[in-house]
Image (cartoon, rainbow, N blue to C red):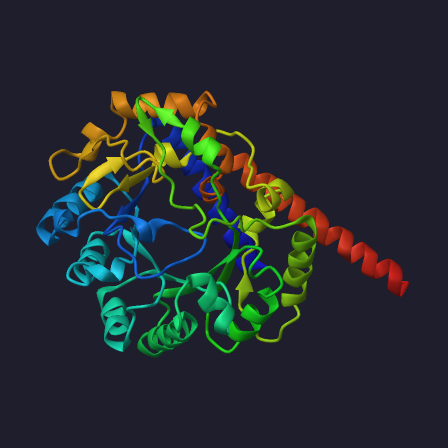
Length: 385
């Protein structure tokens, strides 16, 4: 109970801090794309289809300048993103170590394709705080979703590599992210059963992201059109039907009964309504991401949103974040978003991870009420007063 209360208090404090930074148009966290290149061929993503020149990606000295500026500005966390960020082994370990020395927590999502034992050792030694393994299914089904044979085997091996190198230490924290789609909605129990064999800290099921062509084409800000990467690469929608959604929620409950199962963080799937699963639609709301998450492309340019990669605010190689974040061009984007003029936002699930204080309070109130009703139901059925 004490751990639960501490976790709730932490989430409330984080949401309150996000809102304070949102009002001030002040960056709090950063997401840096080391590359857009990727070896996966996921059916729910088109990132791997991008043809940006790798020769223009920043080198270590340039990234060190960017990180030093982010640190001086007050950034607290840095997510090392891609593409596949392990295609940049020439810099990623030094970046993690540099962030760690300067008090910025590091987060790293991986498809596991390049995460061999030596790489795992280097990540742990550098001081990585949290690693996110992408795992959408076990066995051949997982390979089919990821678009390449052997993907699941590589995730399994990479997970074992990191666990072996971490040993009894607490870091990096190991989390698994599962994107729920019509390709795996009946398989969540099998995923949890597989992971119950390992010392995984958290499993994060999340709704498949899918941007419609109409909303992409209508989302233009100051002459720049959105270019999201959560678009089916196989030409088919992977949203769920109402029956598939029902079955997924049943499997989510069934997973709680698996002995030794890691903690399943339901936040993302609980916060998403039925329309998010079946239509890819979310309520039009104020986005805290575009005001508090400093997104940096592989070339050092700051962006207000990762779905608008050509909406550049300025180079963090050449200028401090305080001169770029919150500038006139940034304010134009934020004003358009707050006015509900960016249709793309109706398809975006990333906002769920940047909640308002009211969202967090409502969520835990609802959870407490559901738990109370379940207790009353058990008492009534057993005849206990």
